Length: 305
Image 1: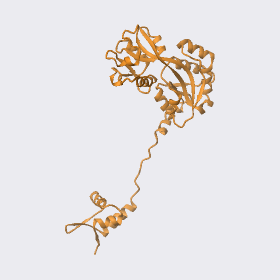
Image 2: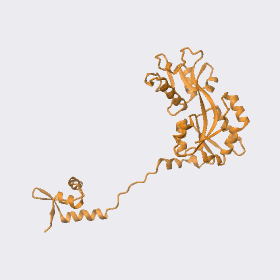
Image 3: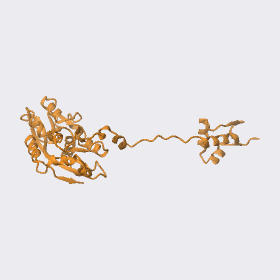
Image 4: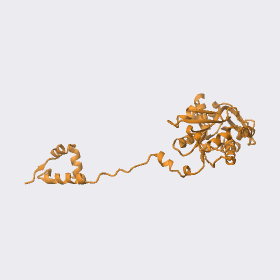
């Protein structure tokens, strides 16, 4: 005669909870029988369950590749040229044109990313270098564990774009929370947005009180256009754009550096030597200063972090 077990006895044999036994029965994994009004598990039913679990194929757990390995398969990294991230500026356009004409130069593909996203892409191996306008110690925190080289390109003024003669009388960051002032903002991660948010915090200005703060545009040309068309009263950007846009005035609010950031080991690789040679050449310095008027005193200097 077959022996029958209670749910508690099965739990003790299998070293599981009594509630788990009932769950196995409910799912149909463990067969059971009614003896009178009581639920019981026969010895044969227990053996059947044990035999089935012993021969069952192990659970297949799919293998997920980390994001870094997926990104490294990007077709761009299999090209024969260099991939440089950075939003369009007169200096980058000049650098790219010189690189294409250099005897030892390599094709350069520009990936239009802001400072934050450029560093993120550098960390994951999607770009070879990133044009970044941030303090080196802040930038290096976004690429942890990677020795970096910061090649100085130039220093430039950043400030307010306003209509000519500044009809709204906008002079400080505190003026941005006035009810009659509308801001044309830049996207998160951009140099302008980072500088703006730092400055607003230092000035004690609540961004919730700024009209237009949530309206994000993605270039200095677009924010300058918003001011010029009177869709906004003020925007933050670099001086060169305002100088070439009739009808705008520029109010300087600070000086920022522009670096070309890359892995320190890359400086010895083909292509990068040509890039560094161009940046340090007299003709590049002369043309960069002539086109932008920016400070090139430290252009070509390298900081290692």
